[in-house]
Length: 65
Image 1 (tube, rainbow, N blue to C red):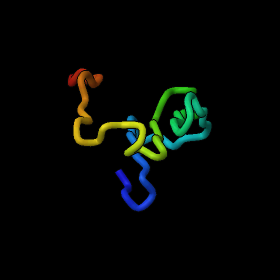
Image 2 (image 1 turned 45 degrees about the vertical axis):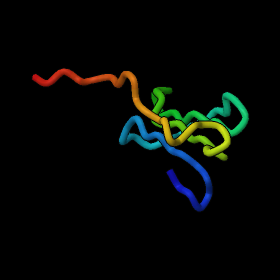
Image 3 (image 1 turned 30 degrees about the vertical axis):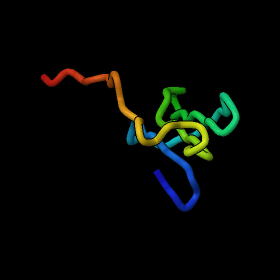
């Protein structure tokens, strides 16, 4: 969360974003060169998300070999 701009970026990958799509007002999805989701950008986050209750419910876990 960046309070100076009231934006929240949720990084889902170390890969760089090459394409973005606004899916709702102030919510942008970032995609890598393969079209995979790499991040979620939420502008005016304090108006969109209750930051006091933000929690992850389910995260993908890579298998460890």
